[in-house]
Length: 120
Picture (cartoon, rainbow, N blue to C red):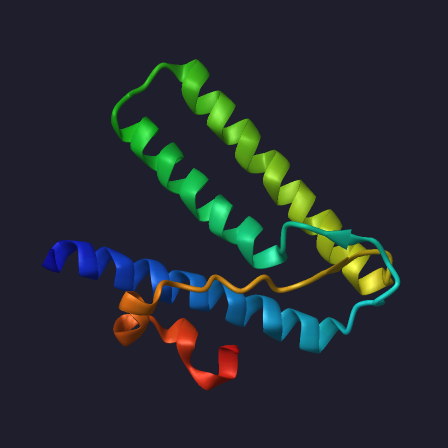
């Protein structure tokens, strides 16, 4: 149970960090509210990139088949390119996004920063 609470705490902090990054970007870029809205956000893409980077690292250490590493690297490169394009479109006013809150259950509120007043 203690380990589960630790994992939940880490995931809650990860979600809060993703939201903080997106909020900062929205405030600094001030995207055009009439532009098309993406369902992914820059920070969720960064989160996915971090997962892919870990997979690539583990695959390289395990001497996985070169095709697996190449496929993971291709996915990573595609995602980086998509993020760069998305950020350029945000700056140009041709894209937009909304921060979607990751609300946790009431039982998790005591160790999840997402329920602080600044997130609601």
